[in-house]
Length: 334
Length: 287
Image (cartoon, rainbow over all chains, first blue to last red; front, side, top):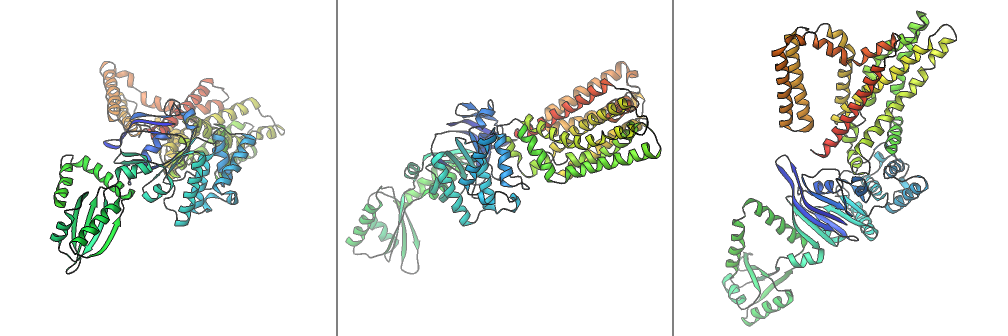
């Protein structure tokens, strides 16, 4: 559907996007994830033909966006970060202009405008000036514009930024709904949002691709070891000794929690975290020590995200020292 | 292109701009014809137009200042880039809309000679020849305004630069008499102009090597001509100013000459500045 090949974009000396490649398949909702300044907007602007690339290609259904922009752009609906609205027009006038520019005429134009207004639920404000609309409604008008011409792919750049929580939920529902009929790519720096809506994730940091794939696969593949937090009145040394007999423990860190109590963070790479918690419980019981508290902390995408982005930052800054750090913490755990 | 044209036209009538433009033009030409045709009882309508073209200094910038800069400011240029229309479509569509807005008051103005004809001898051929030239002169100035509007996202700045440029063009012939016509003066002026051109190229393309290259080549050319035949430069600067003046060519029509070269010159100016506007919009994609 969309193939991005070795995309690079430089602003003077600054590399906003570096050698980015990925493929978008039809019929999925893609989350384009990255911290602020990672190059999300730049990439989306290039994919939609708003910006040129320094190097690389973007093909939409085989049409190169730079060489056959007319055919390629007909397949895309784009909502930029700031919805490009003419403030002194009504949604109806605005949509009519966009529809005509997309080559729709007469009855077909009317039908499609009615249709997208229905889908984005802006029919009731159709004759009010856009400048008077709330931010949520403005965003919807922007999405309606992207839907005109029935493009195969809808690209939305941070569509929920600056909205209140109820509006955010409404826009998310709308995106989910669109996902049933279109391929949707939307960018965000909020992980929970991407987790809630997307089935595939593209993660970038500092202009580089750090992860790409199914949301569930990504969670499984990149999850940090799950963590069990235990509190006990035994000393740190004896906890270390007790846990010595438990396998699959990759990291162990202690924290003083008031006089006589110690909290230990136990990391594990075992698939089933309950196996480990059972083993810990038995180990403590055998030694006659009490477990005062035991909490299971499952890794989520947030952790994956932070780790991946930090890793890529470390890669960029000091590629050599990066290997040393995990090794140290492992020694700590033994 | 049709979509952009219709949209632009509608948006101009949504705002006051089109009405202000039309009102100013009609008022000024109206006052002119009252003074010349009614009070002084001159039967030549073309003199009114030659008086009227001064108002271009004010109203063309009002008309063109927001045409592209507003798109940038409201970030709607992103929409235009992402729609399946070319930058040429956008620029030409907008330009045609401006021409229509300009044509409406002009249609009213072209009734005047017919009215005067009822009360005396009016030579219609020169009147309408001048009205046509008046239209093309305005069209050329509008294309300059469009280009300036495409350079900045600040409407006020666009209007200011347009006023300055059109005013300079209006007075360039009178100014040319005060400009040094000696060879040395011309050489210095040319060098300054070349450096200014280099600065513009650098601003537009963000390519320092190209700007320096163009400057060096042109300055070398000037130096070579200075070395071999310095007499060629005598009186060149005033001549250039006279040749570039859009208004000066219009006065030929007022004097009853239908000057085809002037028409061609105006059309060239239009094509040139529209081309530059397209490039200036395209450049945003490559910055």
